[in-house]
Amino acid sequence: MPCDRMLIAYDGSEHAKRAVQYAGRFLSAERAILLTAWEPMVRQAARISGLAGVMQPEWVPDEEIEDIAYTDARKINAEGVQLAKQAGIDAEARTVECTTTIWNAIVDCADELDVDIIVAGTRGNTGLRALLHSSVAEAVLKHGHRPVFLVPPEH
Image (tube, rainbow, N blue to C red):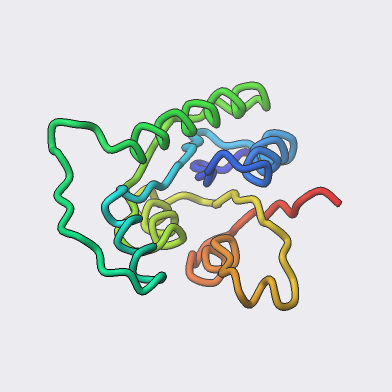
């Protein structure tokens, strides 16, 4: 029996592609939404320069020019929707601007849409690498308060 709503988190990575394929193989839903979260370039630059300890110059984005990060997110999302169709999922395209963290954007969207399940791929990091690189999938699992279908990387 299919669920009502399924949210597929998709960032264009091999892990996300694998998650879409497995969702098509094992899950069905009346409504599927393929989500790509994106962060505006001005915030990416501020975060990176802050991590590097570099003073960031005043940078005001041109409102008339579309943010390259948004353009990329739409392309990645369209690729994911096509991949979902190939996997037998008729998914709606959706992009969301990330204001804090990627996992938070996914969880907020899941709450807004009141989805029954969230689908995500994992990098499968363990040990020191897992400590150094926070896991979006782990945070979604911890904070999502709904079922999460996690697909590990192929070994």
